[in-house]
Amino acid sequence: MKRIIAAVLAAVTACTVFSVSALAAPESWREVFVTRLMKVISSDPSYNEVVLTDLDRNGIPEAFVMRDGMDGGIISAFTMNGTTITDIEVPSNITGMALTDITVYEKEGRYIFVGCEVPRYSSVVNYYKLMFDGQKLTTERILKSYVSSYPTLPYVDMCGNDFLTNGYPNRNKIRSFVNQYDGINTLTATNSNAKLLVDGNEVEVYGYTVNDANYYKLRDIAMVLRTTPVRFDVAWDENYNAVAISRGVKYTIVGGELSDDSGAALNVSQSSAPVYVDGEEKEILSYNINGNTYVKIRDIADMVGFVVDWDGETQSIILRTE
Image 1 (cartoon, rainbow, N blue to C red):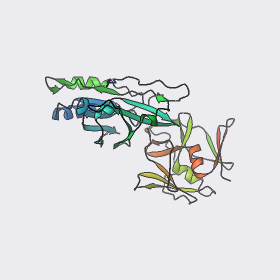
Image 2 (cartoon, rainbow, N blue to C red):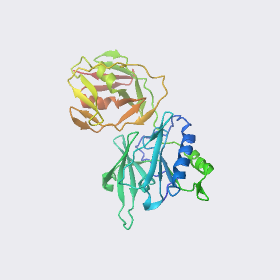
Image 3 (tube, helix red, strand yellow):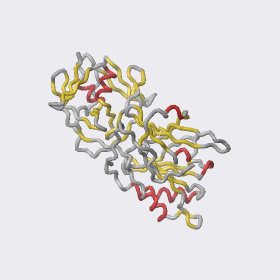
Image 4 (cartoon, one colour):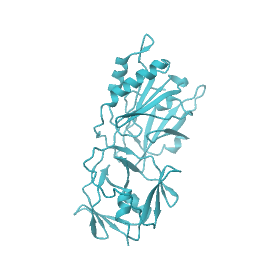
């Protein structure tokens, strides 16, 4: 299978909005990655193939170390969260080959990462939907028809296997490889300048603009609608690792609602946590921004039942609850 080394896989369709304006990711990850890769490859030089790929699109790649070819079991996987290196739990049903050939599809604003591999002694291509939640990589076997109707997005990953000198890992080779990684797959968010009105009254809620749409913290919207007919509660369901919304229930205040974090350094990634409304899973695009779940205001409206209008003259988002 063709190795993709810092190559753009597919062209963006004319109607697709995809920002490549990179957030300034901390560069400290590079030397940490070099040191960790030296250690892993030294432990068993037969595992000397490395993939750097940014599955959560936060500017810092995930690293996967494997054997070459169809013997390519993944021996190690890791990334950085802040200044801490984090091991990634990987599935046993794929080889690393599925990570060397990734295509990204866009479905209603959501990004679907698909890797493919050709099993030994077979010409049938296996396709896997790749899902990364920051700690664990999970996969789902799919048919190509599952995504074939969706447009593809430009995506960059890196694959390399020239890291040994006389059978031992060479730090300079590893450093050169890591330093070539250019994180163009990052998300970007800016502070939203839109006003927010609820039934004609302006409320002070801080949001972000991501890909030209306004996103707000679920708990903030629940707070400002707490006494309205469309009230809803927000909780975290540990059994399903999901956000749970209960309509018609007065929001339970936990503290920190409506706080202004616009001055904080942005850490943005696409959220992998599912969202349930009254026990039914909703397929929506949400983002994790500085540790909080942000959802498009129109998606929140569709889920809990209020009306959203836009006043371009006053740059106002108007919510109507009755």
